Length: 266
Image 1 (cartoon, rainbow, N blue to C red):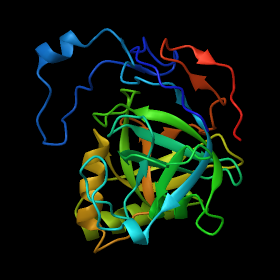
Image 2: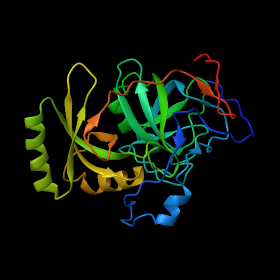
Image 3: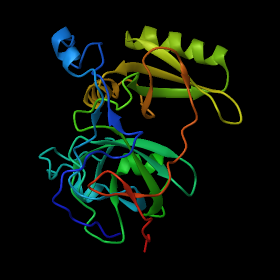
Image 4: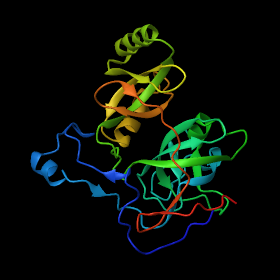
């Protein structure tokens, strides 16, 4: 995949990807954003952190044991059991939803490293993220990437937060029984998110919501000796229904914010 380097700062991505008002709820430290700060960010601002053309589709690979414990380009130590990825140009901290086009699986990751260093690939996933996409055996997969949070880790959709998914059930009764059991065991707030829009409803038992991705990661690290987390998901902070998420169109977004002609994956 070829990334065209541009010096111009973009006016935005596309209409659906804009930074909106800062959420009123507490941040990862538990403090509430002052009213004056909230008033200054009421008007939507363009997503202006992309300095180079961003192609949202291509081939993804993964890296694991050989890089485990070594520093990444961001300075963070690589842990193959985290939900992270390497991207050639996106700012560190940017959060992506990655769709495996072969099996329809998806995973949410944050950018912590640079790579892959091959024009044939657009993303290097952590081993854990690759497992969630069921691509570790093949080594590579065709993917589409969707930006869901800016480098500060806050969802672009101000009504959403991040959750740690503990398990998924097929009916509400099982979900609420599991929710009660996890709450008693972990002494944390548990929510049931209803995944709707597919062939049938599914119920995700989750910890959250978290205002930013880093807060979700911190809690994940704290509880994993006790309970295994399936993945990090995005959902509404109020209500429980989560619409079916489908991959966006394949595109390249130029520095002026306009979609460009679809590029070849070869």
